[in-house]
Image 1 (tube, one colour):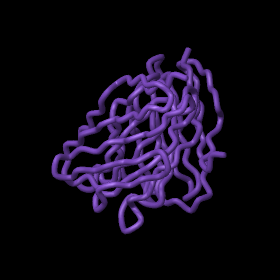
Image 2 (tube, each protein chain N blue to C red):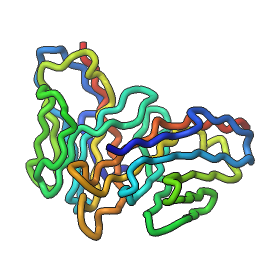
Image 3 (cartoon, rainbow over the protein chains, first blue to last red):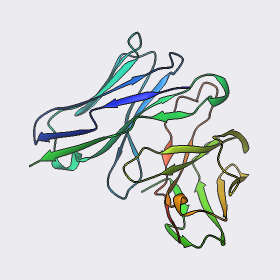
Amino acid sequence: GENVEQHPSTLSVQEGDSAVIKCTYSDSASNYFPWYKQELGKRPQLIIDIRSNVGEKKDQRIAVTLNKTAKHFSLHITETQPEDSAVYFCAARHAGGTSYGKLTFGQGTILTVHP
Amino acid sequence: DTEVTQTPKHLVMGMTNKKSLKCEQHMGHRAMYWYKQKAKKPPELMFVYSYEKLSINESVPSRFSPECPNSSLLNLHLHALQPEDSALYLCASSQDVRGPTSNQPQHFGDGTRLSIL
């Protein structure tokens, strides 16, 4: 089955700095890669996603890059703000077999942005 | 505002009780999901329904029984739970599991925080 590794597990930055979170996946058939932000006690919220036919996607301060050959994708947050502090999860979507459509999540990154 | 509504928000039950969690979406999505999430861990898939049919059961114990009465509703019936079942239970929906609209986001509800005494 799919395995998603996420690093780092914790990330601490100063306000205004950039933050980068990296994920690798094992199943080359995976074709959709969302990123979720989860604040304490709240639901996971989609912040950006990328499909396997695209190498990069940007939405204001957030960008995601995908390297299909190396099977890794990364989240980039620029000009970080204290309200960016949360747990971030990457995920990969299965595109074959009996788990078709299943999202496998990384273990999460606790991002802390210090004012 | 969340587009996936879950009730109740909190539930405390004994190990012999029977209760149900409910989830509703009105986005016209044909895929619905149940996840279990422990503190500081990622959501862990339990069940997937596609067009009201169970398509994935991640070897979940039979004390959890899902039901999809129609395309907008998803229930999770609970019976004889164990203390280790205490967790946040999240419902999600997406456009579809397969086909040209399958690579669309899953939208999560706010969850039901379940405590087993």
